[in-house]
Image (cartoon, rainbow, N blue to C red; front, top):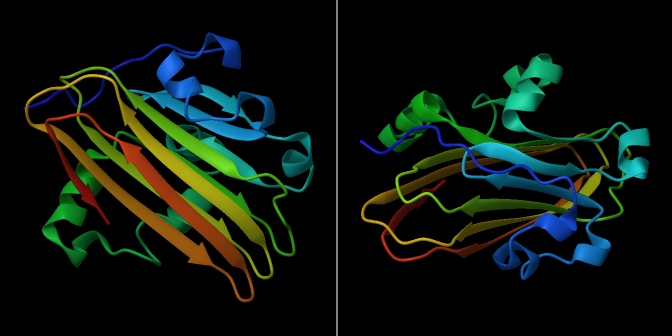
Length: 188
């Protein structure tokens, strides 16, 4: 069984990022950016305007610590059920990373949110969970990238994304993956 939790480097500045990550982000215009290195939150940048507006953009573990009421309200209760499929049940048991985004009522997040997951441990498996919540008349653009820089046999990637959009809200969601050989992915 692959390692369930692996560590990664933290980055204090975008200039410290590996070249492979710099190639997929706009370093000059990354207002809302979260980078996960293997299973560890490695870098977080949230615009001052988003913070002022009450927008939450955090790694899933951090969101559980800081906003447990919101995470519990939406985690596999509205968009995806735990027992919907055997893969969702397995995912629920093994979640080891992810992101939580919450946009309050009547709030427009001016700059896109980019979530980058860098995988460079061939023994690591990923069970990432994405929760994006927009209240009524809110708007957000979210892009995620899964990037592997190593090949391995039987690498597992299991992603569950829950998008809960309030009335009259607008969520633009994109995902582009750069996975090396040896990955089996289940994206729900």
